[in-house]
Length: 299
Image 1 (spheres, helix red, strand yellow):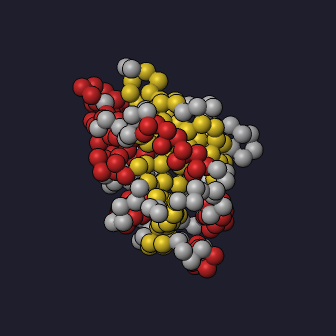
Image 2: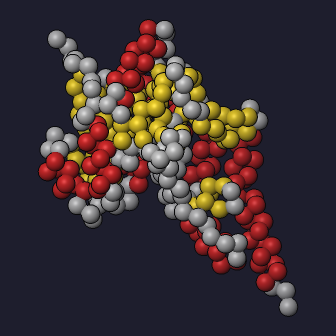
Image 3: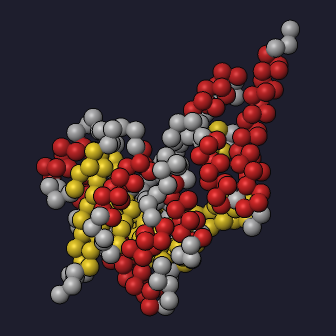
């Protein structure tokens, strides 16, 4: 009997309890009998013993090692590149802070097959996660809210049926081999923020579709980016420096990332007005910084 093959892609750094909880739920999945599953985990130089604990408890996991500078995108790229060598039927992105419900992967596979029968042969399936305390949506599929601003996204709660969307958070995403053959791996230019959104949008531009699976597939608390602090001259200057770090910085109601990375994203997906969209997140902060410097220079 022909076996269908799934590769689960994960990356981790110093979150041993969460990583182990994620793996425990993963190996508790109720998969169809014809499916086999291999797990590729990148440990980005954790110092809390994550790799050792995984090796002891789950020796079947294929552990890859990073140098501590990979972050989400670099780790997932490394895991995916290694898995691609084996030509799996499907690849599953899975964040290590996500705990899947037992039927989660089966739900994704079933809906992928149903969409394929309906002619959606290049369909990405996104699993939605909920907060373990409130039950509210935390991560999943997103749609572009306005035609005039393609970078205003809104998360869409799951319903009882599949829903089409524009892109996705990368917490739990099932991608068939045919999509990978068209789109390839994640883009190394986007080190952390927006790499998942970029992949979904690139896939759409190549004729693929993105769908939200029915119901929730697991739990995952929401993570917040680091805050930029106060609006003082010193704090603003520090924050503008932090935006060149892979995770960016949350400041003035916007997430600021490296101008170079944001340029790639807006130029790729913003059409003729990309330069305006590139400038928008920075305008208010830069304006405040200029005003602050002007006021501090007054006698």
